[in-house]
Length: 377
Image 1: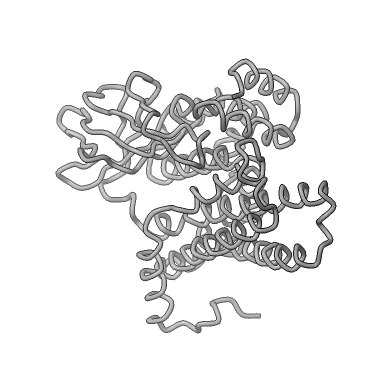
Image 2 (image 1 turned 30 degrees about the vertical axis):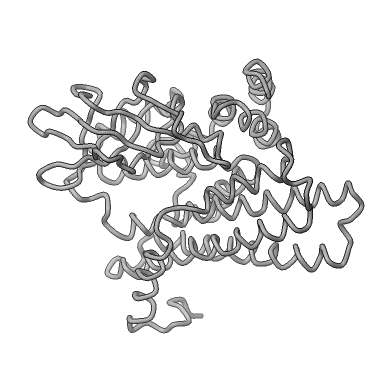
């Protein structure tokens, strides 16, 4: 098992590099064995300026992670980080998502304050999954009750955008989650995404300056930004596929088996599909965030969901192909390609794929638009 000292040493090395990706795979391997502690990778990303780059242009960033005119750079960035560390890419996607919600629904003052904090190193998250006792907000006292589960980045996320039930509907709140007495990573007993630092967070009796409601009730699920934003998840997933293929290629090359006909026939089709999927994700991202057709948000939402369903299919096929190509060594506890496949298999299991298929499929098939698409020469 890798010690905390080893992880910290790797993090110190990574801070000297202008881009952290060269070291992220080494950090990811160490953090996978370190009881979910991902601080070193977050520090590397922070030191390279990536958290600040996710701020919108109007607040001094590069809008990294947004769609529209920066769709290609955003998809490449999310997928590139995921090649090296899917848990870290998961946190980066959450940071982008939180910034989007704050900048879309928050006041100018809130946006300015959050931007200042991000420039000072703040990592944001979005925690939406409730436990048996859902998180609720008493509007009169500004006091929270309840718990969230599957909260990623515990100990590293400083503020989280959460959903809280109120008499008026679902309210977005920006909450200080730095109190680690409320965090519990012990329930996260997964085979993959171990380093995502996920678990439960208890919001009971949080109130005052620690809780800032923003936006009107029920804005969280407005389309095309709710389901329409899953193109970011698709970008992370397809990056995980590239990472698995890259690691498999490295191992097969070392074994002298890379040019075997069976290996080429097994892996090359996955690679080609992943490249095509990344281009589709880029196209969809440019549509969704730019809102070129604001009168038809359902079509944009369905397009985004379609990318998420496609990357799940490609990801599952990639895992199967890589497992067959590498064989038994992939299942060794210290296998890099095995870790990537475990992480990818876990991250592919996002919520309700059947429901997403029904939702997007009905929009695509029952509408009046051409089934071949909206864009023509």
